[in-house]
Length: 172
Image 1 (tube, one colour):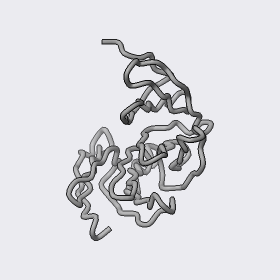
Image 2 (tube, rainbow, N blue to C red; image 1 turned 180 degrees about the vertical axis):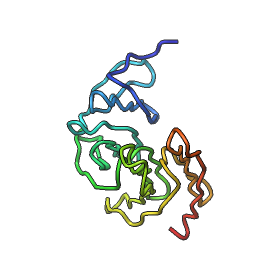
Image 3 (cartoon, helix red, strand yellow; image 1 turned 180 degrees about the horizontal axis):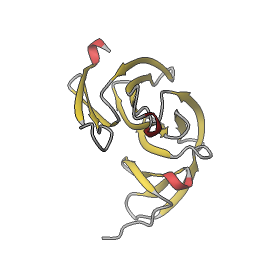
Image 4 (cartoon, helix red, strand yellow; image 1 turned 60 degrees about the vertical axis):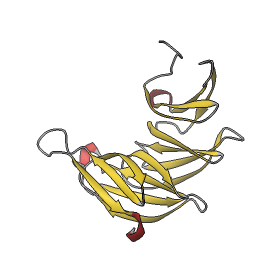
């Protein structure tokens, strides 16, 4: 049952045909693991003190949210290096790629009591923010299906309950 040893503070991951891409928040890196054997291939550094949270592969790139830097990072799988970064919102967490766009959950941050929580839409071709939609407090995960984005908002962990927000992508 123990398939692969992970780095410091592993978090979310994405999987393709050949590899598993694991966010190692404590290492500020993405760990690449061979999907067939569980062998560690490499660490791809993201940015110092960024506390990466989520990773999504789209095409020949990995996209990584930097919780402590308020940025989205673009990593080339050809060079295994960061080739771009983009400010997306306060304390970004969950990511979802869908039809040429990447959607980013911006929690607003714990220290701000999750004020101004929103979801950013990023055009993957231009690597630019094209829209920002306010959502309930502390959005952490999202998924797209049939033209709608479903956003899981956790609330504030104490007295504000969580909700699911649904965004019609045709109006975003």
